[in-house]
Image 1 (cartoon, rainbow, N blue to C red):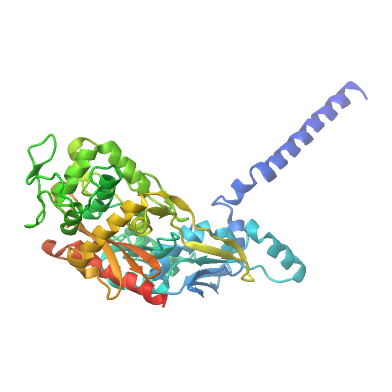
Image 2 (image 1 turned 90 degrees about the horizontal axis):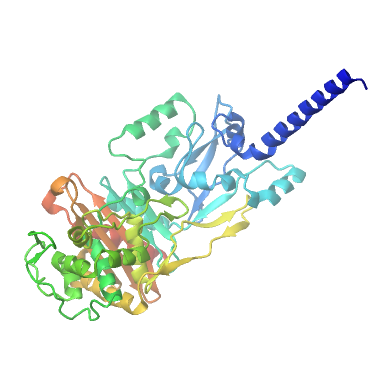
Length: 485
């Protein structure tokens, strides 16, 4: 071969090699990235080319699929009572992708997940059309309905957990929205979504998982746990070293209690019963910021929680002495999600063991065979068994004849803690009403609940955890107990 031909052959070989490298790079290295790009309409068309699998509550589908007309997307998602289940399922839209379970479980619901490989392979030989699998949730329909009914037209949230397993039994956020109104890709769907996004009440905000509030006096349960765990006090009925008035450290400001209540040197039980700011502010100061952070970490603060939907981290901050004292009563920079406060009540009800919250019990193949079953997971021990039982006694006193009597259920032992959380510049905004609780039956504790109500229409003096939030928690707990009979 002469020299010019040899050069041409080498050049063509280099081009072929470059083409092979580029092709393999696109097919193997970039494949997943290209498949998931928003511009790749072919993937989205395939996603909606067949009926999507369902999300299941109490053995029944709360979702469905319907055929669309005049679109290259053959099917779109619909919901049965969408506002009730949107905080759990999220949305699935031909134009605006998906969120929450609809997004995280998309592989199962579309039938594309590797867990369904055998079913896909089998359908190739049988000629059956492609189907999506189902996602079976842990939700209790009666509890979810009780939560929404209790919240009504007020802003707020309810989370109910099974303390023994961590299963999420209710997850409500109001106001809510209907994901069906923008499940398609028409101008009407786009207008409906824009209207929701511009709504000042933020109906698409999942307040149960993505909103953090000052937990107010519900947090005094955590401060009491820190006092017991660190040996500051052992006897919940012994007097504490809590003068009245008590001055916040490094200031000349007296910490105030609500009303004329017996807080001077009150025992931990009595201080929780009447919600004494002075007792728990001083406990937090006596322990110091580092020990308070250690205790809150044991309850799950200061890190994100995955249910599998991500929940924002609840924060107990590193802070100076006066701010740490205020954080110890659930104020200052102390922030918590409703899920986090339900985890606090749940761990105490479960004798100190904190379980990982979860809302997917099972994934099913299209033929309903399970391909995944969740196993409960312990996150850690929030408090010792002995101290958990002391905290139970204190919380049960709150409901029996303290600030939480509105949570009583005949024939059932209920423990709880009220909270009225101040917020805004100089506490100028209307407070949030909180209540955390658990119920106990002969078989242990089947449910723990956290409720927060943002009632902007109520008179400021009428807002209290015992008045607004406790009745909602009571009805949710009763719904769970009744459903197990």
